[in-house]
Length: 179
Image 1 (cartoon, rainbow, N blue to C red):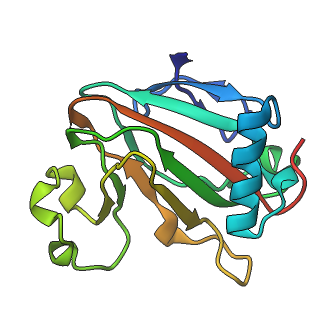
Image 2 (image 1 turned 120 degrees about the vertical axis):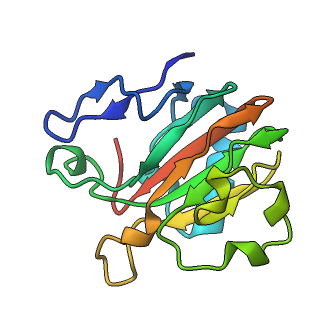
Image 3 (image 1 turned 90 degrees about the vertical axis):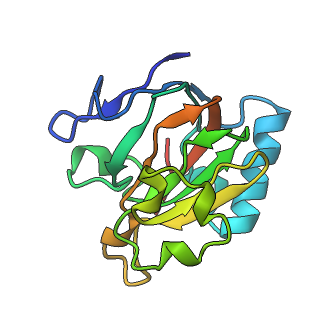
């Protein structure tokens, strides 16, 4: 595991950033039977061929670590040369988190106080639509609308972990084959 990076939209290269403070690693697509089975299940679930997906990214967030709100889609040509635009993200929760660590969608127009777990959310989690990490759950969200335009409601982030650890795995899916 190494400190997580973000993609520089000018150069397309990975770079360190204060907006993302987790550690992570990538698992190559189809590298073993377990990963192949996960990729097949995700392809069946999303109706997006497994060849359109990047490798799985495994992430670990310790107390205080977070990922500021961001988009998974790209606004530059460099990062869309291989596989085209990222159209969807599957975020799989590999652990429960005692407190904090929610995935937040700050642009979503919802009344979060109606969520059954609203009182369990951190202050960060109360700033939009929040999903509490629960081991075994997966969250699918789209970065593009059905008309292939980018969706500003897909803005999302990871709230700081307050107590415990957060383990997750991310799979980004593109409009075309990703190599």
